[in-house]
Length: 444
Image (cartoon, rainbow, N blue to C red; front, side):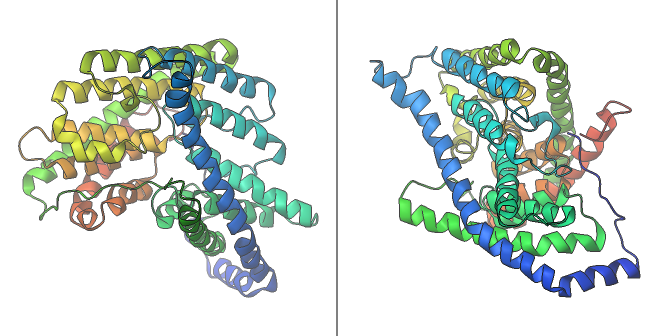
């Protein structure tokens, strides 16, 4: 994933700090804060209904449609036509709509280019086709693009004499609003966007303040719409997990092991995805549906072997992460290893063929690997899952702070107890994955 580089130094000279301070005091910056407030509400509402639509498409594709066709239950072979058709519609959006359906998930998150309004229909269609069909991707990358693009549309409709710097700031604010509550906390979404931001040093505060404001407003909008609509939460939430005591020496040893294993597994996923990417980009109408068929075949193989639901392999893993932690002890080690293998292979193909985000599948794979290792002595299930989440996320996202937060804030009080272990696992995974990365390529 090609991480964006900062446009300025990480520190900041006194002149830089003075310039930023002057901007913070300016009437123009106050207007930006007002814009952040005004656009935060509708963009957050749009993001909420986008996520609800994705969830409804999942249910319609894999539950309602089979029963409407007369099947008493979803047939085992059902993922084959579902993902093949999803691949066709995704490929059509990539091939014929402006913007090629948005960023390739393998490239991670990008804030280097302002999202052109003309590309938003392609982003929307490709994301809905991919996620609704069961591709192993999450909704976060399309949300970031759609949020930034909608913010730019609103500003350009209202005014035409807006500087590029102001447009970049407003686009970032729209992205903050769109992803505010998806990851379970507005702080996690804010850190994710901060780590990929093109702003650096003192200038980071210019985007951070309106971004946090939009995130807070967005989180309130999500909460209010949950209560008003009764459609159910679309934010990442985890169930109560067994309490953890103080970290033991053996658990720190496991942090080293989990970090190293995640680096190797993530490198393998990225290598396979990069090999599939070039032909998939050259022939999307052929190879995107073919990737869908392979992903469906992996899900069917997993279900046939383990008698568990093929939804374990398909989809982002957002809604399946909680049940995995709650019932992880009920999975046998061979079933967990097969789950990691099948979902990892499916993830690698979807990263370069479909459109979506890379966060939730990385979290789910890391959790499943940690749960599998928890069957060995000296590693509690929750600690293993948390370290696995952090380590796999940092390998796939290259965002160390976000990875630590993803693995800890969602565990509430247990997150505080397990945070030292997660930090060790994340650092090890980050360093080892950098050593395994091909020489001469970007960090992502």
